[in-house]
Length: 200
Ligand code: URA
Image (cartoon, rainbow, N blue to C red; front, side):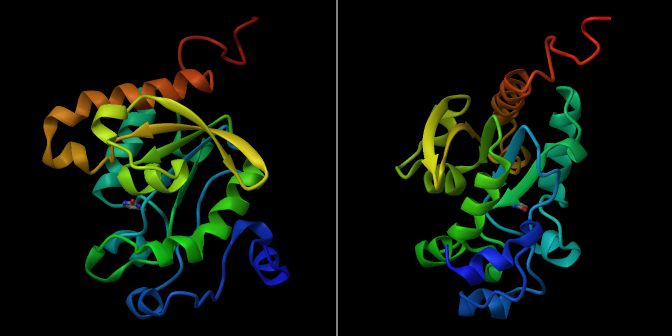
C-alpha cells in the first residue's frame, strides 16, 4: 500500500476516498468497518445498502437484524465482532460492486484484515466469498466450509456463509445461515465451552 493508503487507514478509517467515480456520486458517506481491532471474528459483506449509507455503519438494516439475531443465538455480541464490507460506499441502485470498485477498495479491506488478523473471516454472500477466495463460489453449496487464504501479509481462514438477506426471501436458507454462524462461534470459542469463566 502507498503512504496515503496507510495514512488513511489510521484507526482503520478511510476518509475522503475518491477512487470510484460512480460510488462517490451514489454515496452519502463512506461506511467504515465497526468493532474492536482485536476481534476474533470479522464479518465481511458486499457493500453498504441504503440504511448503512444513511447511518454510516455496516449491517444496520434488515440484514443487520438477521445477523445480530444469529450472533446472539450463538453467544456472540455485535460489539465483540468486527463487521465490514468489500466496498465502503453504496453502489447506485444497490447494484453489485464492479471488479474495478472491488479492486479499488481492496487495499482498505486488506489493511483491516492484516491489522486485526482474526481467527476466522466470515464471508457473507457470494461477492465477499469470491473476492476473498479469488475463485467462483457456489455459496449455498459451500456454506459452512472453511478455506485458508493469503490476504496481504496474513494467512486467514475464510468461512463461507449465505448472505443474511437470503434468509429473508428464502426461508430454506435460514438453517444454513444459523449453522454457519454457529460454526464461527465454535471456532472462536463463544459456544460449547472455552468460556473465560470455564476454570471457576
Ligand atoms: N449488505 C451488505 O453486504 N453489507 C451491508 O453493510 C449491509 C447489507
